[in-house]
Image (cartoon, rainbow, N blue to C red; front, side, top):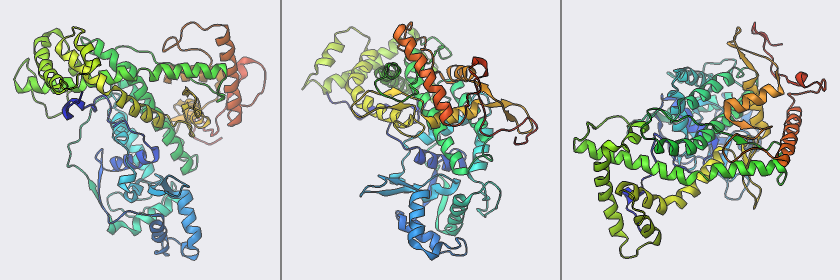
Length: 536
């Protein structure tokens, strides 16, 4: 059965700004930097031609007064750009091409090749997730990010303002922006209205903002490139968590249309730390991942429901019914869900019958067995319409959602929360770089001359932080989300997973065995800052 274009409309910004495509975080951050500069708007750039590695090399070599010594050896400069600065598509392959520059400085977005640097809405989701934090602290976090990424340059005049927050690569990128300042036209792109939705769950945004503010504490304590990589992992982690949680929350919200707030939900992810496929802990992590990814069909159905309820709301507004009015702003998801209430049943059925009749008529020439089955269930017209659209489109969206989640969770990459061997099953993991990022955040205590200070934490305390703050389980099973009471084999796997966790801490340099006593097994900060603000 062929669906019309309007029937296929799926994406709803109140659920997610993403187009649910595979994304690369360097490109997401690059597009995010444009929004950071233009207060939430994307950039409208005017620049001639697509840039290549040779172009970047020429930029550095043609201004020796800004790039001292670069003109002495073009081959070395070319290799340095390729290795240290360029974000490449298909790196190392014969088809290698340039997406842009690594987002080490704010203005690098001006030098991206837009067609190869698409962020598919992830930059917008990240920005709005921060800006719409209910605590109101999101704007402070955005200001801190802007000050860091645009260090060394005055955003009003675009003149260089040297400072201590600049390393060699960053200074080169600043000079590059300076040398091309008059060749690039950059303004906020306001051709399409900006739509700002609150997050499905405000606490998710508040947690992201708090993590950003904590991470910004380290911006002067570690090399800039390392810090940017930390931010990249942190952003990917929160984008992945948001969409995994949304897959559980949104269907629950749709099932309770009378609620004025999202239903309380617990979220548990069991992570394999050792990273060895086939072990008992790996099998538990596979079960955890399978449970979460199995929620995709219900999420697709719930998202279609929200999207079609928005169309229904527009129909009610056009007919001046039930006090629903045309709005210049977005209709909140909870309001759209409220349209599933009994008050709107007759109008909803009439609207559903109108949409359903066109879908059924389009398929009369080649009736679909699945459609016939749904029509025979005796559901109301609106629900029947949603079920038919979902049945026709769920496999399509499941494929794209799976790829999108894999990329947000950095599958098989540094900082990953998910892994999948060739021909094997997905499983949740705790990569060393992700562990480092979460550790740096957990080792901070509020208060002190710099707003935070560092403090050691016991291993069991850190495991509690991972569970309570993010829903990450290492040494016990989640109380739901695919698990029940652990058996004898499960207990052995949990002990092995905790031992692997301790080993991983030792490998990344945060833990040293001082005693066998349980309470003295502590994790120590890599960057130690006392309450008075001094580095110890």
